[in-house]
Image 1 (cartoon, rainbow, N blue to C red):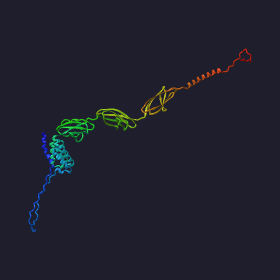
Image 2 (cartoon, rainbow, N blue to C red; image 1 turned 180 degrees about the horizontal axis):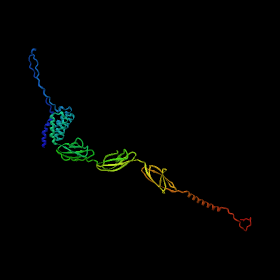
Image 3 (cartoon, rainbow, N blue to C red; image 1 turned 30 degrees about the horizontal axis):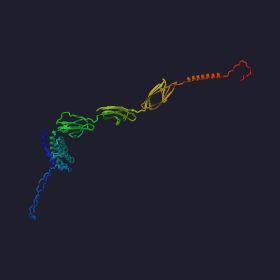
Image 4 (spheres, rainbow, N blue to C red; image 1 turned 60 degrees about the horizontal axis):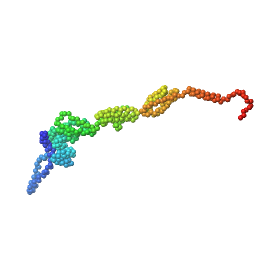
Length: 424
């Protein structure tokens, strides 16, 4: 309270300077009528004297222009409105009108009136700001007395102003103090000028919850300022993906293409699927669990795309030779990678019937093919079979010959006479 009492007399001079700069128009002074010379008889030509020499008097000094007289015509209406609002103690409205006058005229002297309005509103930090702007912009156009009055006002008001140091967890955040947005974004290079006392501060940034707090700004701050932490609306972490084995590999996260590897970006915490793809290469994928503020590295490797599969060949009995597409592979068993498509497999062994089969190999397929050989009927078996057949046929023929061959029977002595025949 004591400081306020000291401040008001000191600023009264400033207010008088500002407000009287455009005093009401003075009444016009009418030049006094010239006194008429007395009428007298005309003098003779000889009596006419030379004209008296006019007295020499110094010219009156030109009065300096008022601030109103320096303004352009388009600013006069706003200037008069500001004066009326100021006289009505509507300092907020007067501030708006004076700032409009300044925008139209760019006359730095107008800023003095803005500062006086801000002082009357107890916005001391803003008043100091406008006074300093007046001195900086006015420069040599301001008289020494004008500059002195502005500096005197600053010294008087400055005792009510302090610097607020504010630390915010996020860069590029917007800060408002008592509803007024602070120029610039976090982090601030220097303390923010504020009035001594308690202030309502709000910190905002897209994607984060607003942080609101009350700060007591003292005339001298010794303690470390508190950190204002902005909480993200969506809890996030960073996924960093690298891909080896293929150039120009594309990175997809949760099925959405993000760009070429290497890639890093922020994502909501939780489970995600990371894929890598490249033309002519087999894709790779990984499932991850991302935590808050974590930087999770995901390393994937691509291998060149090959249309092939793995085949295992087995032949029985032991000693069977294996052939693949006409090429000998060895005996009994073989395993290897074959191009995708159809292949001819043959197994042979002496004394056994050869076996042949068609094997169709798909990409990345693993197959096992087993060939069982059956014993072959050889030449000896045919000979014995033939001999047996001949023996059977011979026996049959002999039996038929014996049975069918005509026999010669010697005559037997009897009782009938030769040449006689039996009668029926």
